[in-house]
Length: 318
Image (cartoon, rainbow, N blue to C red):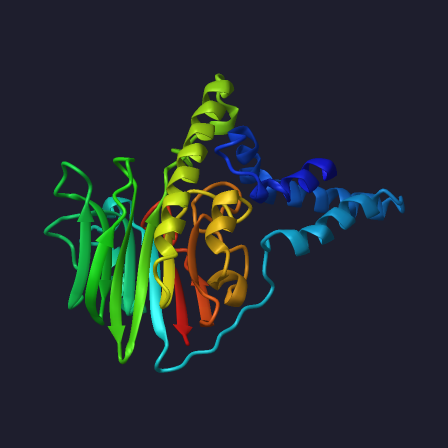
């Protein structure tokens, strides 16, 4: 287990386009960390020197991989912070509460957090939509006027665009907002889905070979999408915030390629596991990244279950 965890640290150097099977291992890094921690404690209680093996590998991970758990975070807040929320809303399926329910619905939850910029994946157009923003950019899927992605903003949007990925259900869009004298580019990323269903024991499927093949193919598609995004991103030299559902963890090649030259809001100011997907072990697959010059004053992962994803919010300044 220590050897497998050690090998997993180099996964983010290997593109899934080359060896897609290795990329599957990145999903299990949190599990491997917990397992090695257990072994380390077990051997320590037994007063056996083998505890050094697991503990050493875990310490190495502190330098070569993203944190699995953060004990404390930054709670600073300033009036001129830009409050950004990223949320895969799953077509707003669970946003509406019954009339007799006393708990707020998903729309009221978002309103209570009052983000200046709201970035949505798996958007669905409906008359029941209660999002109230003066500016917005919605990009629908090909051959659809209902499903797509959206960026809402309290600040004026002066430019928009789409990378028009080949995948029908996924895309990357952007909007340039004007905050005082600053133009800030907001990217909304939704990479190829792995189609993991939380209510099912997917990795225990009878036909596990087909499952691994399906996930491997999704990782290959993600690699292609990432390359396209990075080429587009290079053209923008100003301030930027990258939000979205990467459908991959912080131990993946995809995440680490997109992270280069940027800050992860969770790593800078978050705490806890940062779990963003409702699965049986902590999976952080939704991210808010900024350029290196940004100051991350706050990062929060919420636990409200209005979707199969949990919303994340960060306060950002320059």
